[in-house]
Image (tube, one colour):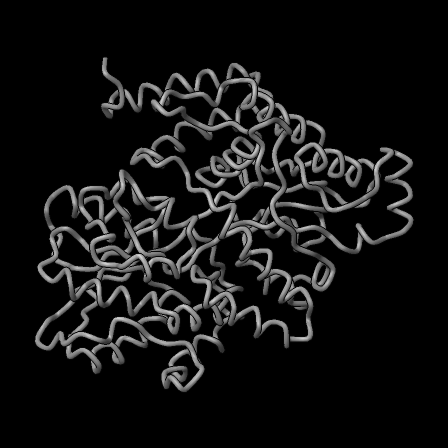
Length: 456
């Protein structure tokens, strides 16, 4: 589900090419882990994600092999969705012949029972280096499903050239009675997005993806940010309650009033980001991975140097409101079918070590370790661009405090596939919010009933 674009890949090529040079640990530099056991004669097979920056990490595997005597064989490199399909098929058919497998917080529920509890291989001290929120999110029934590699979460992106304009500030104060400041609630987001659009400062006040799992996740952020959820503790659908209806009506209102783009139901990540890049949008949630793209004048001359980042806003205000933070982390697991589990654990310790994490962070990935955060924030402080450091400080808070996975069910993607067409129908005005969510809730309950979630 991670959003890498061609432009982002191109802008990071120089960093990728220099990755292999960062291999000689010196005093004071980040350290490797997992090199302290003799694994001579053991071949560790790995099924993992590939493409672009993801593969830079694997250039360091010879270091692990030389130090331990093991041989690491990458049996398959696939993108996230394709590797998920292969894993599901391999686990179901007993075709697993590899020791280390890619995992992800959004997909891990599909693999429960097919991967080893990693609490058995990582000490409390080793786990303490990782973001507590991710470790907690990745623990199901007391079993840690994965060790995170890097993460992603969305920050609020807003146009500083608009927010810092004295004339706009004065007109906003006159129109609303409030000072124009970076919003911290969904009510404020709505009011500001409408102001910017209605007064012609931007073509759209806000921008949002409109189909597939992308919009299911964005709706989820607004939902849990407002104190709601898709399901209760018994997996009964509850997203058609008052909170869910309020969120759906907000999106319908934005679409009807032109606050978001007319082609929103066709937008996924690239198109959504393009609206902001073009200078058409005042504020929006966006993944950190787009930062270098937005900051490059040749790519985005209308926003480069003219935007800021902030922690995600809270949803509609009630006692359950909290900041947005739909997030995910790429990770590694040990397969239950592995014949070399201890060796696989050593490889995962190496691949998620401080040294490798720091090298990946230099390519633009968000870290999952505190020691890596400290280093890259220190690096950014010397860049001469204040937002370089500010973005990392905000991201660290979000990864540490706001990280929230989708519902931990194997049926997350099937659920999303049945949910988002109903949400699209609501946005288009084909059905009311209550009608659309009720229909989606009925289908969701049947999906989970067929999967055996209820005693019926």
